[in-house]
Image (cartoon, rainbow, N blue to C red; front, side, top):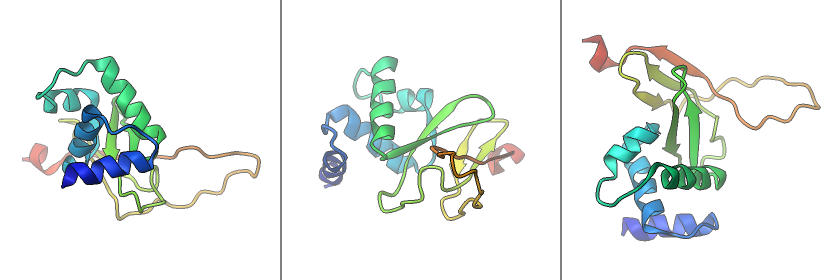
Length: 139
């Protein structure tokens, strides 16, 4: 049942519903937090997936607006599926980053403050990262 929903979501975004795209989108939805390339590769073990293919899949999902990406202060890009009915995303919410373990979380229900920019400037992306220690690392 979930596969059919994901297939339809990919098709609505004009993407082919390949097994790799379905699996990666499913993983990102299940985790509900931004994952790095390495975390995704380590989680998708049921089929061979090379780094280049993963980069291409994530780029297509991001370009289609199904996934958003955020770069932490550690320089690592992370990817997260978002609610397709949320027109504020991507970049509509801040993220938490644990400076010890690198875990990142979306603060989906916290909207970022509006920032006035010059009329002739076109905004493509915005991000706010709050750095600290997660509950697990604080112990």
